[in-house]
Length: 432
Image (cartoon, rainbow, N blue to C red; front, top):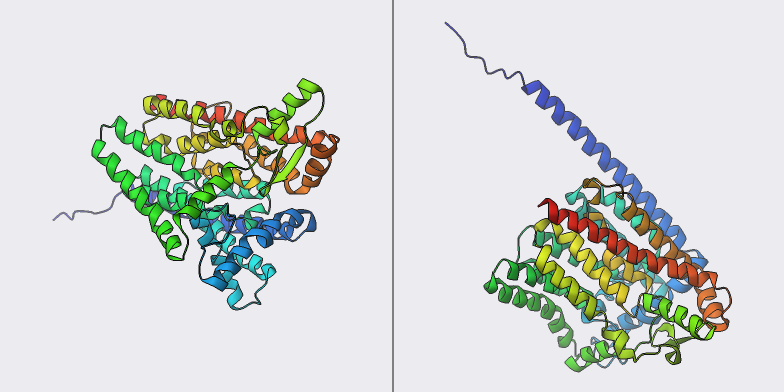
C-alpha cells in the first residue's frame, strides 16, 4: 500500500524567503520610525530658534491666528476684509485651534496646535508613501529636513495630502473619485486646478467623451462642497472673487524667476540693481523696474503651460506617467509664476518621492534628488536665515549681492530639475 506524500520540496525555500522578506520589512519599518522621530525632533528644535522663528512666525500672528479669532468671534468668514486665502485654507486655519480647548487662547498656543497638526500630516504622508515604495518615505523625510521648519509653520501639507490621494486614485483608474479629492485640494490652494486638464486630456486621448463630463462634474462637487460650507458661514461669492483679484494685484515677487530676471536686466540696462517694494504681504520688484504691465507676469505662464498640455496629449498618456507629469505641471507653473514663496516648493516637492526615477537606468539617477535637496537648502539659507540681508540690504542699497546670486542659483536649479524630470517622463513613455 502506497501513501501519497504532501511534502513539497520547494516549501522550505518559500518559507525561508517569506521569513527574510518579513524581517526586511520589519527592519525597514523600525528604521523609518527612528528617522521620522529624528527628523521631526530636529525640525522642532530649529522651529524654536530665533533665527528661523523670527520670519516664519509672522504668518501665524499676522494671518492664520487672526482668521481663526475672527471666526471664533463672529462664527463667519464674511466681511473679513482683504484676504488672499481660498475658502478651504480658511477652514484649515480653524483646525489648530483645537489646542486652545485646553490651552489659553493666544497665538503662541495656536502655533503649538499648528505644529501638532503638521506632525500628524507628516505621518499621513509617510503612510501614503510607504504604500508606494519603501524608499519614498525616506526621500520625503530628506525633503522636509532640507526645507527646514517652515513645514511646521504653514498649511501646505493640507493641500498636498488631498492632491496625493487624488493622483493615487487616478493612477489606480478610479477616475470618479480622483477629481473629487482634486476639487477639495483646489479649494485650499488654487494650483491643483492645473491637474484637471491633465485628467481631461487623458480621457480625450482614449476617446472617453462621456467621462470628460463626469470628471468635470465630480471635480466641481469636491470644490463646491467646501465653497458651499464657506458661503454658509456668511461669506459671499464676491469675496472669493476678490481673493483671486487680491493675488493678481501683488507685485512681481523678488524670489520668483521673473524677479531674478528683472534684477539682472535692470543691472545690465542701467548698471544699477533694482529696488524692492513691500506690498500686499510680499516684497516685490518696484513697479518702475518691471518694464511690462503686471498683467503680463500674471498670465504669461499660460503660454508654456498650453504647450506642455499639448505635449501631454500627444505623448504622455500612460498610467506610469501620472506622478511625474503632475510634478512637471506644477513645477512649470511655479517657474513662470510671478510669486514664489518658499512654501510653494512643497506643491511639487511632496510629489517627488513618488517618481521612482531610480528604477530607470541612467547616469543621472542621483541628479534629481541632489538638485531637489540643494534647491531646498538654498531656499532655507535665504528664507528665513538671510532674508533681512536680501530685502533690507540688497534690494534697498544694492549691496551684499551674493544673496541675490544664491537665490538666482536656486531658481536655475528648478529649471534644471524640470528638464531632468521631463527626460525621465520621455523614457517612461518610450518604455511603454
